[in-house]
Length: 159
Image 1: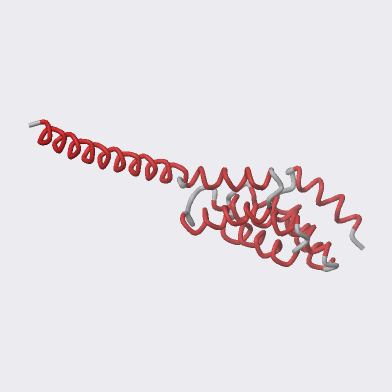
Image 2: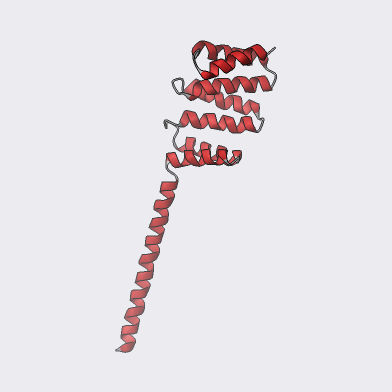
C-alpha cells in the first residue's frame, strides 16, 4: 500500500509540476503581449531615443509602424525615425522620414516640426534652394507657429 501511495503521490506531483509550468508560460505570454502593445512599443522607442541609443529607437519605431501603420502616433513615429537619422548626420534619410510625415499626415501636429527639421537637413547638405522652399511653405502654412518664427530667422541666415 505504501508503494502504491508513493506512486500516486509521484503522479500527482508530476501533474502539479506540469500545471505550474503551463501557468508560468501563460503568464509570460501575457507579459509579452502587454510589452508589445502599440503604446508600449512607441514608448520603448522614445526611451531608447532619450537614452541616446538611436539605432534601438529606430528599430522600435519601425516595429511600431510595421504593426500599427494607421495608429494615431504613426506620424510621430515617422518624425522620430527622422530624428534618429538626423542625429547620425544621415540627412538624406532624415529628409525622407520627415517627408513621410508631411505628405501622409497633413493634419498632425508633427508636420510643422518635420518641415523645419527637413529644411535644416536640406541646409546641412548644402541644398539651400530646397531648404528655402520648405521654410517658405512652413511660414505660409503655419505663420503663427513657433517653428515659423525659427524658419524666418533661418531663412535670413541661408545664402
